[in-house]
Length: 123
Image 1 (cartoon, rainbow, N blue to C red):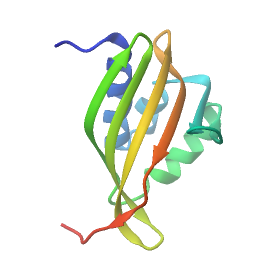
Image 2: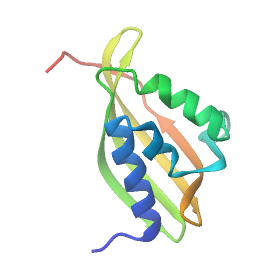
Image 3: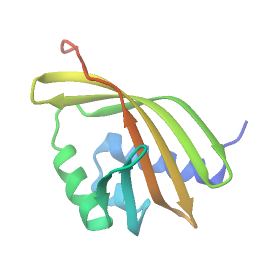
Image 4: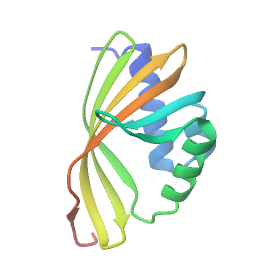
């Protein structure tokens, strides 16, 4: 099964996230994009806030998002990921569901819902 154009945009941003490539990551987002907490709440409003949030995130030594599922309908893409992060309490994994709304060739909005961190030993 081939991926949709919307899925390809989301896949590009996930690859950039895992490479910690801020320029490639930001190239996937509209200038006025929003990152939201599902069902309501703003994480970042606009490209400048998204960039600042991810410049800090990309400094985490263990950062990596493992895609466990993806599907789409039209311009909406839903990912399920397990994200390894460096939390203040230590290295941990967190389950994330991300819902992306694509407009043209970029992400316009993304909603995130996360579980509770599970702390893990280093590999």
